[in-house]
Length: 151
Image 1: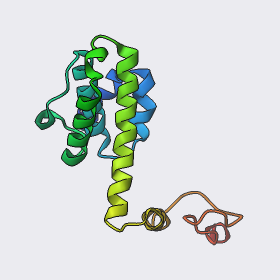
Image 2 (image 1 turned 90 degrees about the vertical axis):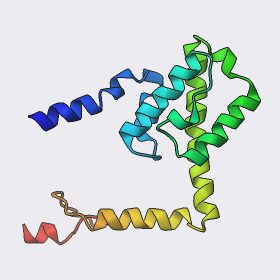
Image 3 (image 1 turned 180 degrees about the vertical axis):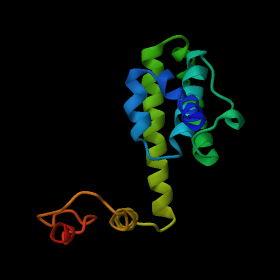
Image 4 (image 1 turned 180 degrees about the horizontal axis):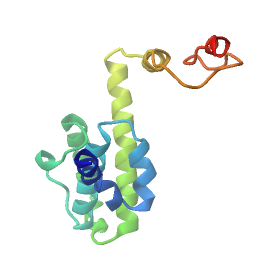
């Protein structure tokens, strides 16, 4: 029971996310969920205060991506307009989430990692997991269609 309470406390940050950002933060692929949610809230709180967050205090995204985003926001001079403007701030945070995705994709391409190979690796990981579902039609590559015959 103790571990359930600790887990609940850890992810309480998700309750703080505004509805407009919730799904974006949950489904985003960069970083761990808790770290991502906490980082997004750090960005949001700083922007609502009309300030850029301090790069060293941000928990998300990775430092090189974070610094690029901070420089871009500084150049756009939009932060001052975010002061106490939730709708604008949330829109800026959405753009930050998009920017992190773009930067991550760009980094993979520069590193020579084709996104197709990455998807293949993910599919292989799924395929190697056991599943309680039967695949009568043989449509899912991660389900063993012969499992229906053995049951």
